[in-house]
View 1 (cartoon, rainbow, N blue to C red):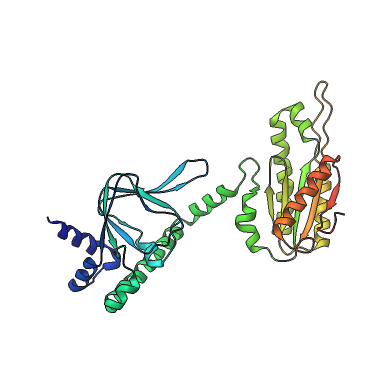
View 2: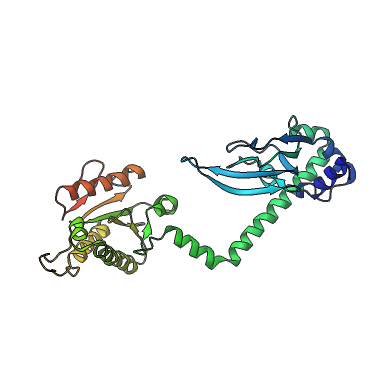
Length: 330
């Protein structure tokens, strides 16, 4: 089999060229280029616009994402006969990953590196129009396939989503949920309540980490019960023993009632009994709260200010409720 026949078969397999006539395929071949990459040479980089796509004739292409620590996540490995980047090309997207040759590789490039689709449209507008129609069909088909996959596995997808954001030891939501999802749905006014147990280190040092873990489970239950009673809201674990409640469309008077209820519930927790020469441990908490956007209109400042008020009050002895405001704490 000659090289030209290999090129023809590979090009005819590409979704963007599906059902094109022989003369149209001939035009595409004449406007394609060849690219030879040695092992490790880059094919494209993150941030580049996808102005071409590639059909791999020989070798392998690795697609990956690097991390700041120098490690890399492999996303895909393409072998001879595979098409690379056609979906990004069809959408006119920007690459969000890197690609390099896994070994010495040879690729067909369309359009050729020195050409653009605008150039081809001036030469053969009918051919380019057919390619664009195929692009629309391809994108629609792939989107439908993804949607069907999600619908067919909805319970599994939901389970994965919850697992990604759920703190396994308490059942509270993780802090990451705030930036990833909660901020995008909040409406004014919204309440943020943060809590840090007092003297928690004494409990852990005297009774062990298991006592601390048990206490956090009990505190988490108080937060979850409050959100269940209200019917909405997010109970969260921020850091080791710092927790929070967020309520959408919640005013100041409603927030004050929840803060008082939360404070009383922590104080009413059953004490950890005395053990040998270790005295009985009674629970109390430091609480900070604020209303977005009344107390601070900029979310990052609002969040960090409420947290700073919590920590400052806790370091000063705790067992106190503090209302954060950008104009001055109360």
